[in-house]
Length: 240
Image (cartoon, rainbow, N blue to C red; front, top):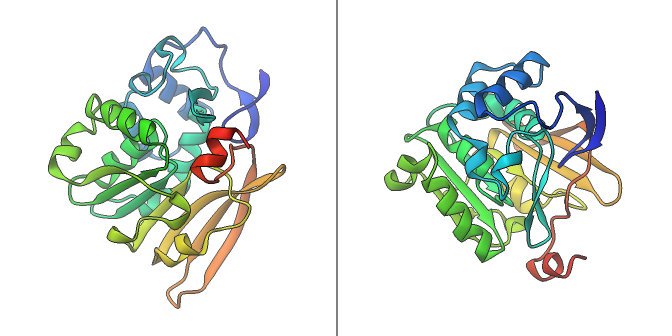
């Protein structure tokens, strides 16, 4: 096994880079190594082909992050699986989910498949070019019907402010590291809802934030991670 920095944690690479060329095989490997334990998560990741969402399809199923331009990355498959697992109970059909820093749209599409046409999935990304390309990716994927039905959309905006139009959300995922948890995201979380967000600068932890019925929050650290920073569009384009 090889250790590597992924779009999240320093983790074991579960397979050699050339051994996987099929989306289903990628998901099965994640199941075999205990990263995916939920049937619902497995079904969503099998339905949404990662190869549609990456700039280099020949490496789509390797357990590694990829640059997507604009000083942004798509996380490694194991990190996407981990976040889906952490949010799985808040991604039931009919629920609402917000994906901050939606990038290529891959995880947004997985969320949308899980909450289904009765639910609502909102992606927020502050790079307009990524929003445009992510919508093309989504429309070429299994999540395409959800766009047509109006239950899935990606918007240009500052994800640190969330997306108030469809709040409150059962689940919120943030795909970049914030120096601290944005209050706007906690405010837009439904009681009983869960937020998963990497927090920190040089040293980062993946935080799981649960909102209690009285509006208070409980926060725990899941694992050490390494993400690009959650910042302004201008700072991201400068590579700050």
